[in-house]
Image (cartoon, rainbow, N blue to C red; front, side, top):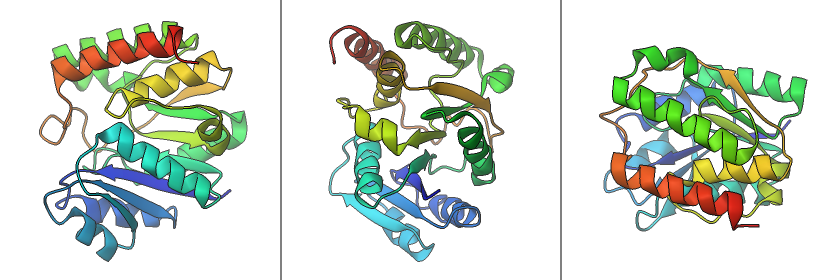
Length: 224
């Protein structure tokens, strides 16, 4: 199966090189979407062997992922593995996704962290559990971790849905879109390089949480 490792990146020059090298050890094809970085993210990524697509300005994680999805479909990839640029997601876990896809045929496989929630700060643990329950209900599917960005998307799924959001909320939107349209969604447990990622996250707790909630409502009841 032809698989693309897709890494959205913003100001990640200190970590992106190692992530790419680790990805290429298990999957040759790697693309980085440099989402308007002000540092040397794109230069470091190219030096590490990745293809790089650059947004001239920062457009949001969802927009970066959508650019990568379009790239994957254009070049005939059968699946996309998404992972973060900060080193939280371990590329050595990629074979777990591929094995799960081969076994189940799932179109969206989420790398779940529910077994690690006890290591998170209490407020983040609560937010993850609460959002997972709400999004699982909206998507009509069993999701235990809706905010993990370590995922496998099938080309069939990416070609079969229209994604409208551009921020962190896009990763919630796609769960709802997939579940409501009958695509198979599963969660598998993964290990992480670190759990919280507070210092490297661009997530804005209040604004992005409200945006996710509004996106989920629209995806469930209005967007078709």
